[in-house]
Length: 122
Image (cartoon, rainbow, N blue to C red; front, side, top):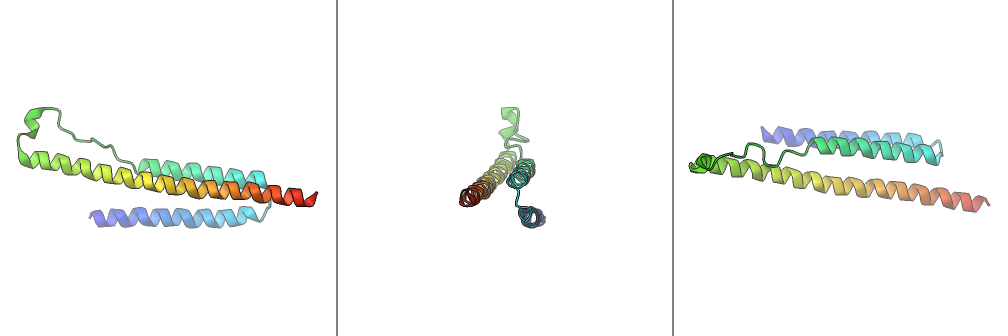
């Protein structure tokens, strides 16, 4: 069942990337720096919002009392849940760094391209 969850998040990320690229190509044809930067920044905000919703609570279900940990099965269960939450959090952080890099490159390249065109017109 966990396999289906991984596939769903993968397809969601791919769908968002395709929608972003199509929108970026449409907006880029207008040749307006302000509109391009607004589109990229709004898309970045939506991507970060969706990514933040995928971050789990790290210590959800942690036992409140030491007596809950006396049973080895309960202890193993709590450790496995926390390990899974940490893995998901690290994956979300890796995606965050990758998305931030892509959007910064898109923004900086747009600004450089705009100023090169502006300086060549003069």
